Length: 393
Image (cartoon, rainbow, N blue to C red):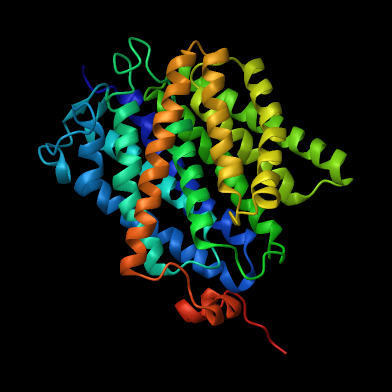
């Protein structure tokens, strides 16, 4: 198939948008949610994760995810050997397909960061996310997107797992990993301090909302009607979830918070992700409206019932949202209930087992948490020697 210039231009833009979701979108969204003395540590960890995942994707991640194989791919594309600007993958230059998929490999481990901000060490952050990307994200991406065992014709038969843009590959894996790491680390010493900058959170959320058009629309890998529909339903789900989260918060607490509004937006975005290539606008409204309430209750369940300090609610928003949206593919999008539910179970078990093992392995080579003094004083000054804000008397 010849390279299509229009599709290439579209996916080039989508690639930039997905990276924009992480840098600076996710960095600002997470940075505003923590205390002022930890905001730079969030920025630093996010940037470092983006850099490290990019190098690992070039070395091993891409070839293991997107070359032929049942359980895992081969090494024929390690370091992009044999890839030139003219090498095609479908309708796109392969180097562009590599770059687009790299932005997904960047943001998925970065999402997990929200589980341990304010208490995990920089060494643990890099060691864990590097091992996790190769041990969890890469195999799961191969199984579903790389023609592996969960794709059409795999272990679930002719109709395999349908995950248009990452409900399982990105959101279920990141959400479950966040829950497990948060439980392993234990709670912060002070869990009650509110976010230091709701305005920064809202700006970051706005960047995520816009960037998600590249995340979902770009997953069509072509400038066509499916991409346009994916962008439209992504926006509508986000809008519906924003409103339903706010309404549910108003009913329960008598007020609507800035943090609640934008968290609802992200819940709607995560929930529509796996279904975005398969559903209609009215179905997107239903998905988003349910997600705003469902994810809000999931956050309460994790934090106040299970008492797991998933600091920035990665599981409640991304994990539950991605799982819910994956099921909705079978309800609205023509997917198989057996394949969708089976895929969730297979990936969930793999993610949980490997994540727990990696936490234990990392504990053998680096401290999982900073010491009590560092946590109380903040990671910005203690770890990085800098302050985000100077206080002048």
